[in-house]
Each structure stands twice: as C-alpha cells, then as structure tokens.
Length: 285
Ligand code: PLP
Image 1 (cartoon, protein in one colour):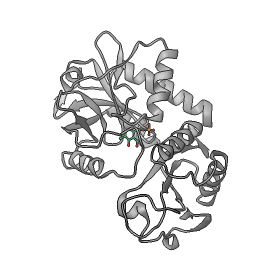
Image 2 (cartoon, rainbow, N blue to C red):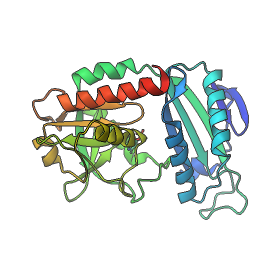
Image 3 (cartoon, rainbow, N blue to C red):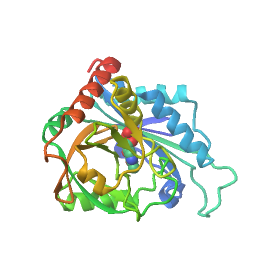
Image 4 (cartoon, protein in one colour):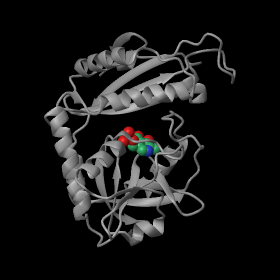
C-alpha cells in the first residue's frame, strides 16, 4: 500500500509524520472519507467543500487548492490500484513544540491513504438490516466540523460491537437522537415522511445525507429535517442510516426493540435503490 505524506508517495510502512504533529498531540486536524466505485470518487465536490469548510472553521491553513487535492487523491488511488474502495484524507495544523495555542508558523500536514472496500457487503446488509444501540450524547458542540478528535465515536462504536450491533446512536438528555457514531440517523414515519436531524452544529452534515435528501425530494417523498426521539424511532414504520461507507442501511432494531415490523421496509429499499442508481450515474458501478 502507498500513502501520500506532505508531497510524497511512499510505501505505507515508511510513511511518517513528526511526533510533535498537533494531530497526534491535540487531535488538531480534520479529515474526509470518500467512496471510490469503479475507480471514480463519489460526490468528490461535496467532500472537498466540506474539507475546506472544516479547515476554515478551525483556522487551519489549507494545505493545497481543491483542484490540487483532487489530483493528489487520484494519484493515491492509482498508486494503490483502487477500483472499489475508500480514500482517507487528513490535514492537521502541523508540527510544532507542544503548546496549546496555534503555533506562529505551522505548516499543515496532509496525508492520504486508500484501501479496497467491497460495497457488495453493503448491498447484502441492505437485505438483512442492522441493529442499533443507544448511548448518551457525550461529544463537543461543534459536530459539524469533521474533526479527527473521535474518541467518543470510537467508544460508542466499540459499545455497539460489544452488543453485536452495527452502530450506536447518540441520544441527548431530551431524548432526541443526534446521529450515529459514524453515520446519520433517519426514520420513516407511519405517514411516509422521512425525518432526519437538521444540519445544525449538533451533527456532521453527511455528504450521503445531502445526496439522500435530494433524491427523496426528486422521488416526491416527503422530507422533514427535524429532531426525532428514540421513542419516535420505535413508533416509526422504518429507520435507516446513511454514510459514505454504508451508504444506506435499514435499521431493524434499537436496543433490542424492533423497529416497525422488525424487517427492512419498502421506503428504505426505494431510497437505497435511488441511491445506487445515482452511484451508477456518477461512477458506472
Ligand atoms: N456522522 C458522523 C459522526 C460521521 O463520522 C459520519 C461519517 O464518517 C457521518 C455522520 C456520515 O457522513 P458522510 O455521509 O459524509 O460519510
């Protein structure tokens, strides 16, 4: 495997950053994960735009232009001969003597890696559905920034794994669900309306979330961007999750309680079908 590190393509075992990199010491950095299908990056403009926004929100200097970033990304994918896979892009504020305030002359660190991923695993999971566990929301208040500070997400995901569930949903004190550890959360109400948390500072504005909202509207499915509770989800006809790597999976149980009839539902199936059609349109997958 080949990685990109600050201007160079190197074997991943030889790819290194400084031990005083602020990403390592403070999680002072941001990232993106991009789906690659049939050799093409899905929704690249949206990922590049969100990456730029995350950097700006943290006053980290952009390591290069969006156009240059896309050229490097393509080189990384080619070097790793990725046909179907996931591209990882990370930028940090750079290396400096450890001190909390921004260093005066930090040069951002940019790394990219890529790995194969078979999305057919997901089309299979679409038929069976997945399980969710819930846990109290314990993250900071700027979840719209795609920060590499992911410890709460890591712990949430592990709690899901320990419970043999696929994902953990973060639940606020008022009972509303903000999102999953690495996915956005949705329900399909019994009247057929699909509901997902508004794109506020409380959630990551998922690229797949945006794509799915647009597709739902195109298909004349009623959409509401509003918070919902775990009780709402258990009372809903269907629930599902979205993300770059998922991309749309039906939720059949939450904390061991069935959602709807306890099997994947028709609205989720229709949305997933529309999504795969969009994937095919963009990438020929
Ligand atoms: N929410 C969180 C916390 C995430 O980490 C992610 C993706 O990693 C998502 C939602 C989904 O975002 P996207 O659709 O851009 O992959």
